[in-house]
Image 1 (cartoon, rainbow, N blue to C red):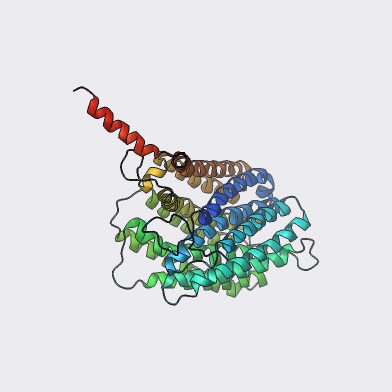
Image 2: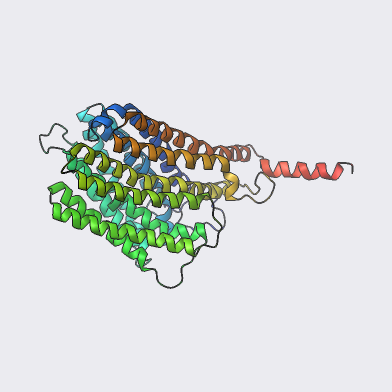
Length: 456
């Protein structure tokens, strides 16, 4: 098989373990498309969701968000940063591409099958998810076998276990939506949501953030940092206990698991605060994204507590608030994913452009990450994603279809703007390079010549 480190034209300074840019970028592009599909699904499901947050249209919209948007984005980050963190390459580029194809198909077929009540499609999606899980585990086993490396590697290992548990449980249930094996009730759906959001995707973000925050904030914490280790282990263990208790209807274990989960997520917020205190880079849009993501985590905790307390007396309102809490939890990850994409995608694309021979940015100065996207459009993306999450939470909590539809429209807008903004400038530069012209450099040369001959 092709080595993950094989990359013709690798520019100086890019570690040999880093995969070719096309590997993580394929996942991230699919994530943008998945976010658009998620928004469309929420608009389509607005009426059914307002009446019953556990209805099939609502579950389909949730799966577009969790699988096609969040999971694809997190998998892209994992394929990029697992080799960076461990210093060891993925097992194979071919395995990474096969993993992408399997997860892409599963993440679209599952919500489509649920939404349109196509049992054969949901069963096929479960099989594809299992294939994707095996490929993912085999590919990541190479870099994650390294010893040491602290909380980030521990988080990725635990996240892989969370991915296995979520995929196996989900594949079991989607194998027969008619109830011949199991009855897929609301509390089982909730259990799978908790497992996927926190024991898999959440733990991945918590671990990778321990590498991204110091790099993007120029924050280096003195001495040991126990909050990172506590956040990884407590989040994973709490989510596992809570999901198991929800699936089996054990209230005492549910509260115990929720308590441990709160400890883990609280430690994650403590770690973020420590990085903010020690940062040496001035406040920027990335910091606003990360801070807002943390706010959604607090909102999710409040909504979940309110829903749990109201469920025994006001069932519909309690279910609505719990559904809003799950959306806010997804909002934590989505806000962070969109924010980090505006740092990570230019970082990856910069190395691709350098390998193609790019040397200068639009101003004629050396090519920088900030030259690769429009910053005002990035600010607009922050506004649309934040408002979209807020509208969905309000719509679900209040059982109000127009707010759910508005949230869906805003998510569609976010996916379109982010994809266009992060790709337009790099594609223009790449086209110029492959046509034999370094456009920025040529423009700068022309400006210098004009300055010489221009009469004073």
